[in-house]
Image 1 (cartoon, rainbow, N blue to C red):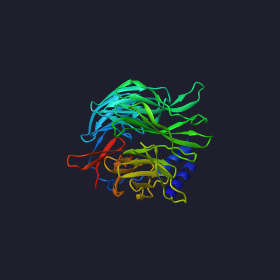
Image 2: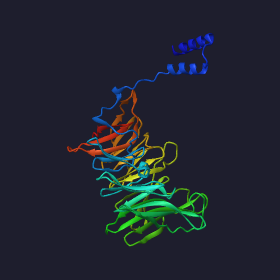
Image 3: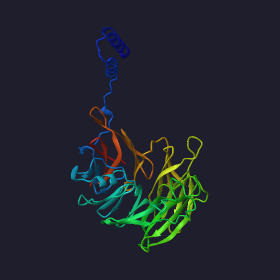
Image 4: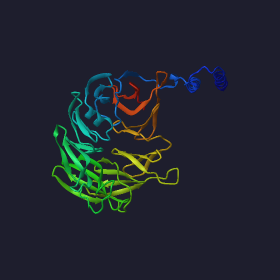
Length: 423
C-alpha cells in the first residue's frame, strides 16, 4: 500500500509540475510514509517512583556518593542530589570541576571529601556540606586523566614530564585534598633510558594503587613499562613506601618475555594485585615483590584465547570482562573459573562490589547479576518517554532502605527511575 501511495504521488507531481522543489516534496512524502512505531509501555518494567533532574544533569559511571547523596555533573558545573528523598541540595557553576568529575576512571574519597582529575584540571568537593572545596586548572595534558588513586588525604595522578632535550616519560604527581597549593611532581620510576620511541618516550606508567599496609604505613604500587624497540615492551612493578619516602622495590620484572602488551589496570585486595595481561591474569604478591601465579584465560569463539580488559576483585573472587564480552569470575583461592557468562554485551560492564552486583547497561535494557554467583537477578526495560523508549545512561546508583531492601536508580533523559533490586 505504501508503494502505491508513493507512486501515485510521484505521477501527480510530474503531471502538475507546480512544485518549485520536486526533491523536497518527494522527501516529505517518503518521510510521511515512514511512520515510527509508538513505544509500548506495557512492555516496560514497572518502576517504584521517579523524579526529574535539571536539563543536562548526569550521574557519571564512576560516581561519588555519600549515603544516598550523589554528585551529578551539569552542563556548566556540579549538583548534589539525594536520590532517596529526590532532593536537590545544591549546585555550583564550576567548569574545571565539572570536567574533572565527568569521565574519571577513579575517584578518591576520604571522609566527606572526594577528589577527581582530568587531563587539564582537578577538584575536591565536600559531600556532606554539598560544596566545592577547591579546583585547580592545569596546563593541557599535565595529567593523563585516567590513572588516579589516593590514600588518606593524599592523592596521586600520572602525567608526563620532559627532559631538557624535550624527551618525555611518565611520572607521578601528588597532592593534598585539603589544599590546592600542595600539588606537584612527586616521583619518576627508574627507567633504563636505553631506548626512546615516539609514543611512550622512555617509559609509561600504566596503573597505580595507593593503600595502607598492615603496619599502618602507606604505600603506592606502580605498574610501568619501557620500550626495548619500536614495537616491544618490558613491564615492571614498583612499590614505594609513602611513610618512609623510599622505594621498597622499583624495577621488579613482570613479564619475562618482551611483547607489545602493557598492564592497563589492576585490582588490589589484601596485598594481592591482579592485572589483565593479554590472554592471562597476573597475580602479584605486593609486599614480596614477585609473581604469585598466572591465570590463562579460556578459548573464545574464534579459536583464540580470550583477552582480558577490565578487572575487579573482592576477598573471594575476581571478575574480568573479555575481548568477546564474556564475563568470567575466578575463585581467588584456587584460581579456578567460578562461572562464565557468554553472549553478553559487556562493553560497558559496571560492577558494584559494595552491593555484590554487576550490571550490563544498554540504552533501553539494564541487566542485573549477583556478583558472587553470576545469577541473573532481573532485567529492566526502559519506560516510554514522549512516545519513545527512554535511553538509559550507563550509570547506576544503589542504596538500601530502612527495611534492608536494595534500591536502584537509573536515568533516562532528565528523569531518574527507581527500581527494587530483587534477590
